[in-house]
Length: 322
Image (tube, rainbow, N blue to C red; front, side):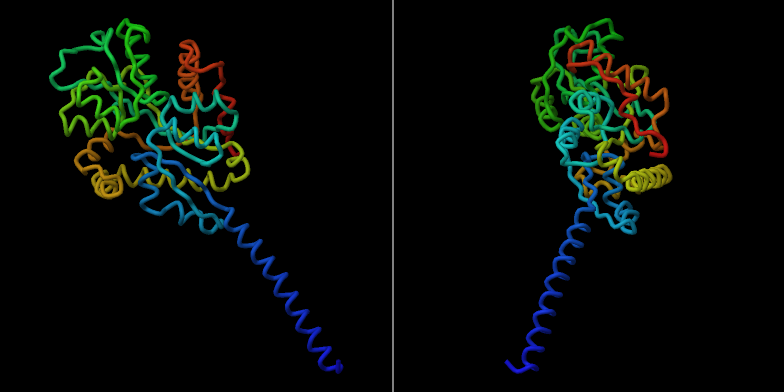
């Protein structure tokens, strides 16, 4: 082979090798970028839905090289089961779901919470029901989503009325199924949260037997995978900042928030107007009081045999600056 031809062949081979190596490097770089995804679980209603609709979190995370994947869940227990299964990194639920999740795994971590919103959950009865008080629920069937925030409301409302948890029958149903059972009379009462609560009050004139006022706080918690939060503190900080800004916007113009949320949720604006005004905003790290209140939930559920072992809430709280 002539020298010139040999040199050309060697150059071509070198170029091909360089392209191959560059291609591998490019593929690895692309894979690395693709791995920087924050997987967020949300429910049909709440601050995270507004955050998703506004695109604010994507805007905040873009300079950090992260993208966001959103997944909707019917309720908090299902969301945190997914978090424990490492299918979700961050989510938002009420008081009870993280109790069950922490009892099942040490991967759960509390990131922050919103202030109490006791009007945002209730025990409802049909408008023509003869049930006039919580005490009248003795022997009756109450529908609820097992392990949700209203599970604790029911326990404490019964206690306040002089009844025990065993004095009533429970039908564990997700919100959509519970609403259907409530309308056809298969359950006597329904323990539920907003916006399902507001929808039932608005559409079928369900009567409120009691809200959580004077019974339980009804906190909303932002929760994460401990592994994800420890490895990505800057993402957690960006998320909390975006939630804070969204909450400020909602407080300043709740009507606009309801109008923006209605199309994405399929919930009529008048219902959302009611629900948003019962929601609380002001995300912050967990205080000693919030931790103590949450410990009461955990201890109550353990005493009732609803979780298999005692847990310590403080062990699952994100430390300041971490």
